[in-house]
Length: 329
Image (cartoon, rainbow, N blue to C red; front, side):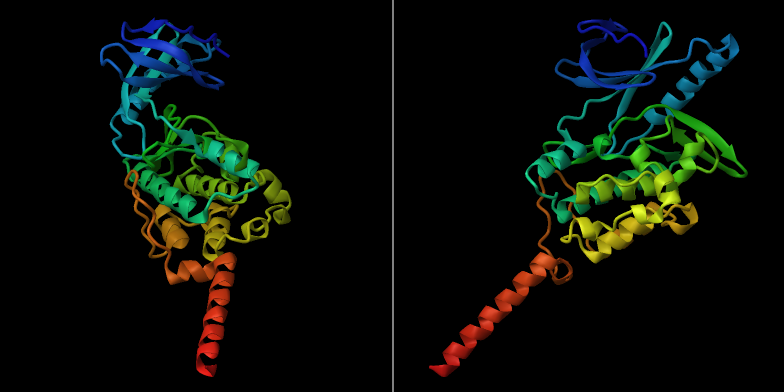
């Protein structure tokens, strides 16, 4: 683990370190002041390459960083932090991104669990729609960009209600047969990692790997229960408890979509994020603008929830009793 930078250090004469906001195996993520643009905060992702590598391999790794950072800097989507700069200092490379304020979804989930509550399904599905927008954009790039580390802590909700898929590291260009994909560095977090990703940076990783992680993330957010690791699921398929057994307020449609996304074999999952979005949301199109309220639930939404279905029957019963009393007068 590289020695972290100290607060007040200034990099490239522009970025003054405030504090560490994240750590990984190859370096830290820092909150920094942009001294050129007063009042702007940014996130600096640090990468220190393995110094034990032969000189030629180390040079190739540094050259690859520059190519990959250029790819990330071209991305422009409301649900992704903007990469604004990249540079190297000594043996370390840095990626400069917008700092995203707000809480991540893991924090929101833990707060709800501490109150013995679940995150509302409709809110989670609203976030899911925004994440689907981000992934459709990434997967639609040429070459395709696969994030490979989707998880609750990498999804931040801004104070305005906009979801951001954060923690963008480096990308790697992989060639597999006739398919070339761009893969963000790292093997992901075990709870949300599909089986094919355990092999590391192989051609078997594609957009469907993100769909598995997407489904596993929704499973955790809606049930307060971590999904089993894919390796455990392979050895014991019964280890995956259906979401509605953990949270009966989840609709059947949502449960079916999540379990489909978490299929072990990529061929058995939704083949693209739009297919998964349709399975998850149907014709419901949540408003994703900042501060915009969720739309009123449809009749299908109401009937699909056990609690709301019970309320409908109680309301209908009261109406019938009231009608009977009126007729008897």
